[in-house]
Length: 419
Ligand code: NIG
Ligand code: FE
Image (tube, rainbow, N blue to C red; front, side):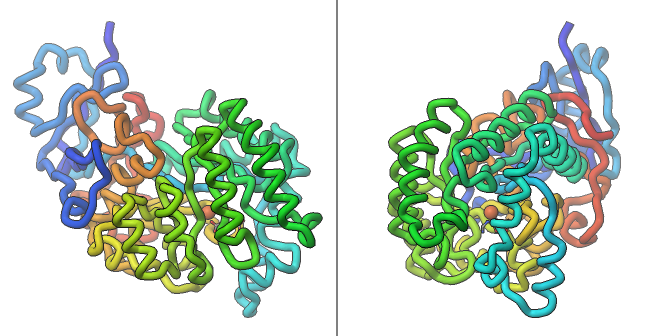
């Protein structure tokens, strides 16, 4: 007995097909493939076929007779959204710092005074595994209700071997128990612990000599990320950390040029990072080098919005041939949101992206940014049946009616998990 699900009569079915081999760039970012009155037939958690409802009905009449049906009349069906950059696992919130920033304090002022990432690190170190698990699970539930079916999750609020591993173990257990797929990134180099302030190299050595080997040995992460920013990790320290990760099979990612231009985009190209993220202040040269070396730009406009900063130059990046993905950067300091659809709105309204480009950026290009484009990110034969149904009659309405949750149904591996 196979498990069959038939989603039919979608006003628009968006497949985003044809970009699984390579991230979509330039004009290809607009090629999302829209099928009117569309259908998807799912068998055993995978996409069996997609097409016009009448064509799929004619081709698979016997299978469809035994399938569960979902009528998507007047609705828009897309691949499950993918969030390729989150700080999912952490304890607590920082609304007090938000109030301080509204009074004129800057993000870096607060961090340098021992707040910011340090505040969340204290809370995360103090939290038990169970507490962290419960908080993070609640966030995953909210991500799902906003149409997201896969997230990347970083460590980086442990800042010691014991607590970094605790964070990564929480992600691992959530991957085992939750519907969401979670891709793990080690980010021990998220901040220099206050205790090492006078000797940052000591902490860099600890990340390289102790943490990276142990995280890799335990198989707890796929990627290795570093916050390359003035006052945090220098480009030279970042290079060492990313190269050390590579030696242990961890693929480089980088928080680059978020607050000021600092050579982060250039470094991403040099070390062959899969993505460079943020890039609010990336140089033109850095953007050119990213295009040449196929580094994906993971842009986080929620962070620019929330820090009241300039937005990344998405239009320029796309026009120069950089593949762009979008993400929430969900974290308690610079982007406390779990709504990827709102980030899509910002992509259009604040970064000059088109509604087609933001769909590509949150599906197949986001999948490429976490190395999963072979199985997710588009609705094509054989791919995992991760599907989001929005209660809007066309995809344009998704970026037009902003600040609302339009999600109607979320299907993960063929199973409706949000109805
Ligand atoms: O991506 N910039 C560094 N890390 C996060 C913020 C983390 C925090 O403030 O807690 C970011 O913006
Ligand atoms: Fe981040």
